[in-house]
Length: 133
Length: 89
Image (cartoon, rainbow over all chains, first blue to last red; front, side, top):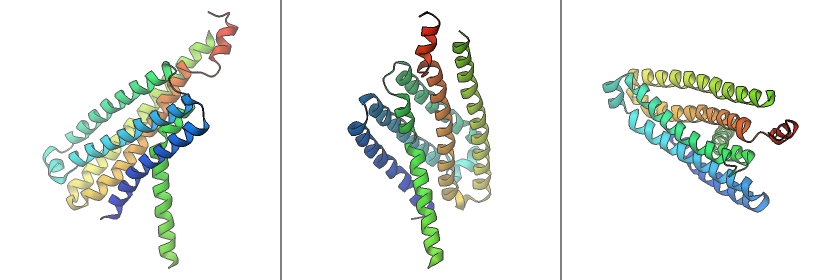
């Protein structure tokens, strides 16, 4: 398996693990609204990440790129904005109806970013150890 | 009243500027990735993966801006105080 593919797999898996741990810690140590914010925010971004991955996998195959050229950018961006609008509506409902605590929601929405930072830290550590050996 | 007007202005500017920046960033990233794949189709896998991570990062920035904008409009921490100062209207 390619190194780059490993990173994506790591990010995908750690998204769910972080969401699970974050949700559990939230449920045990914070008020219900805060915990709900972590869980729902994490779910929104984790599902978003999956959809983005599928879109890019389907669109950016060499044969499709050579066939459709630059019009592909438009297709990807249209799908992106549809996804963004749906997540925006969900976040709007969660905040405007006061279903979740905004800070909990922010923490939940950071799940993917945290996974990426973890993946970067892991790769850097590997790199340093490789150089040291 | 100025408080509420200021909040709405800030929310609009926050999401507007963020969407503008994210749109430009994503467009440039996608365009570069497509050029790369067209020139070297064998590198498509690597480019795809790096692009996925880049786009997810940019997207989360825009989502943060959206959340901040919505907090400013619907869940501002000082909203109750401001409404009380206005006489409850």
